[in-house]
Image (cartoon, rainbow, N blue to C red; front, side, top):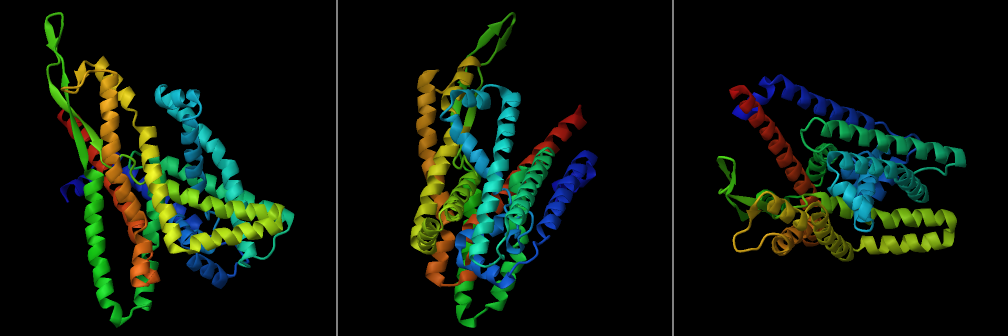
Length: 423
């Protein structure tokens, strides 16, 4: 409580929080602007029949439910980021740009991601509109009307990406994560309302069990997110002039969940691709597109198959994102340059190999945990048969992880200002 009060006593920090809140309100206002000519009942039926589209609606902050100009959410930008991260493993120049050229290289890398976002947003918007037209949620759109709607949807995604970057500049959490967080939280009242409407006295034990399970999962998510393996690091003594440096001991923290919630977001974005591709294929070849669309719907409507694909994607992306963001060889080189070494391990390449083995082992536990949490909605629906309990662990995981990150960044800024006050 004392730290919460301190936030509003510091003008600079208070201003940053108000800016983030204002930008989130702008996002929610834009997300409430609907597209005319929608068959609301058919749209609701489509979202209820597809768990994947239901998830996408949650992450877009409910924008898809009323087909607002923000209907795609941050999905195009996330997909562009995935593509750029994959390209770093193919093109050495991009890897050098991302890892070795500092902030200027990262800024250029992010600029390339924004460039890719534009065609991806147009492509996804076109696919979504064709999907909605095929389900008779929207009336058929002539060429110019389709082009206009695609341009509006693309512009909406770019505005949302811009709002996210403005939030990130405030150093109060990641802007894209905050937008997803806001989208999930904004859907909670509707979920509570659905639970109240569908309340059945015979299912009270199920609701109680689900509430207890939610508390346990929350505790587990916090435990995993805060869990880390501490690698001891010692520094050799060095004499420069009349002074001696080093001779101290520290540790290198390796988080169990090094990738955070990014693998789940990546997996959801990838799962959306088959439906987009099927709708685009139907525009080129109606027969092939219809067959492909039927095949995709048949697979994703099976909760067991969908859950297995989702689980595997989350595990794979956890390892992938950890490999992209954590470079053991580079860390080993930095330790060697600064005179540090892991006791019992030779500096240089042996240290890098040791760190690689450790991160693979602890990432296995984190990846399996993320995978189980991601498919928890499928498990609860299969066991309980209650569709209103469909959000499950994925949304809970993202909300908790983003909240912890925001708390951590605010706390670090409070600590910096305490030191400035002492000076």
